[in-house]
Length: 507
Ligand code: GLA
Image (cartoon, rainbow, N blue to C red; front, side, top):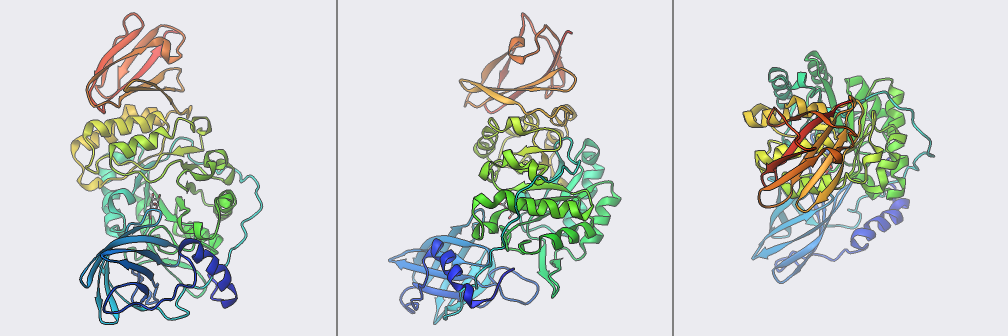
């Protein structure tokens, strides 16, 4: 519940004070600087309900430098920027949002554009601050029964990495159609998941609707199902999501029912705005609440926890009914981000298994900032670590090379292996070797060249735990059988490339 209750203002003050210091009500020094406190009179974020979601800007100008904070319902942004004459530019960040704001001092007002949207701000009046958000105590911990889903790591597509807020019903249908016609669905990419920015407003009964980009969620779910695919959605345990749309705070059961009624098969539940209310010691209980709510709907819904790897999630993710949990911060389409995320998997391996998986975040394959060589490494590492394979590119326009990477059936088989073991790495210089035992007694072995120049890798049968002589080995990217000689196989690996083998031993 978001309580509009002045008796709660003390808590609010504490919350705000934590981030920005309470009671700063200095009037802006108009005409000279933008220093002061401002309240937007137009929506900070586009709402299609007509209600105003304000942004409260507290800015401090020193010469041409600008610093400050922006508070919205679910977030506090720390911003900085520069001023030139009457114009200024600000960038800031909450957990993931990096709004780009430009503005000018126009008489007594500020005229702003935020990520292309026009906003007006006026000097703040007493009472403009957001009312306190009442903390709803999370439940007492208990183990939530396993929902029986995700026996192998979930596979599908998610809108966020490529589309962010520019996703709508039409694009999702086109993605679905393409995944059917290009064979992705049949290769195992079953879930089509809409990420943040689909959310609309709540009605008087608190029922959540989708916004105008998604006129009829149930109809869209029916469409996805009619194509033999499954449909996923996104929410947050906070009052607002990371992109500041409606979260499920105080409406957990109600939203779970709504999702089930729409025909949702997968929920990504993203901590973000919840951090304004709960400490990370409440993570497990807060996630348990939605885990129970999903089970109660009676609909099989894969439960994906998104909390950036904080709070030792791998130790309790399955206990709250989670089928996968993020072990890292957000991935971006760079080699260093991808490697950073996979490095964090070394310690999480014991916690992966059928029904419950570590999630180093969605794939960036095909988003354009890495080479195809690097994308092959990305795909190999996700497969070796039994990570969910959620493509994050524009499926409608991908190149044949990207399609081949995402749809390499041999690599997918490594990821989807029924044993559900997660590989761990052994590093030697620039080469890092990951070994994954497979259900049929064979192993997958990947050697990644982290270095800036070509390197020769030698894979020894004795490193693979096979305990006997190699019977056969296949290079899963070259699609060719290779021979181990004297118990070893050597190959050249280009910078940032990978050698990925499936090796079986004589019984
Ligand atoms: C967080 C998540 C991302 C994405 C965005 C959406 O940053 O980690 O994967 O869902 O929120 O706002």
